[in-house]
Image 1 (cartoon, rainbow, N blue to C red):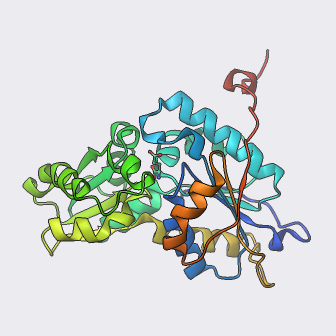
Image 2 (cartoon, rainbow, N blue to C red):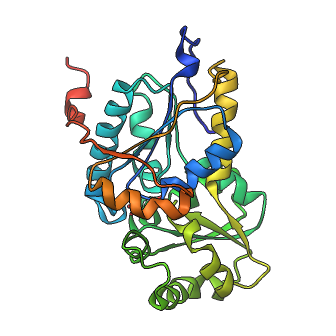
Length: 287
Ligand code: DGL
């Protein structure tokens, strides 16, 4: 389902191990909420790379390096699976890192593309600049159904506004109108949230879009794919889950304050800095 091909049998005690979820910041909480809904028995370690956001303005090489560091850290924490709760990482790094780590890693692009193709034929994608320029959604959708049309729009201002706690600032509505205009002109029938921060904007986007446009949140399908993988690998947790562990690379206080309204409680947040991992060149086979 997720496009992930990983076969191994579960080790004793692995079922109770946490699922790792990461994003640059608050966006992954929209995936976490979906995980709580679909997989309530799973324990979770959440990492937000808040010291280095927004990822959407970073180069592909930087994003790949950050993802390698985070996955190395997740592996050290004993996670049994990692869900990239970040489209930018999924678009720019998933294919490269999948074979580098000995654990199942799921990304948002393919599950999101599959869900969108079931909804419409004229698909708009709003995403970070890095995700939009990668054209990852256009390619994934073309592979599923080459007759479906796709328009991707980079929205550089959304993530800094959301992380800056400016969801109620009228400016966010004005800038959303600018980003949506080309998609409305093309009469899209479906819109993918191509960044996990964007479901926070649902009320604003709903107001601006024709009511017939269907909104697709890839979080729903990536968590469904994770559930299937856990079943296939016999890795589902059968005991009560541990409390979610929240970690960030920036300020724990800021993250805790901003996350409160979305989570409905104030999380305890630790600061961690995933260590530098080996450079890509060191992973190449030596003659
Ligand atoms: N929420 C992430 C995504 O889905 C990253 C946003 C950012 O840091 O630019 O792409």
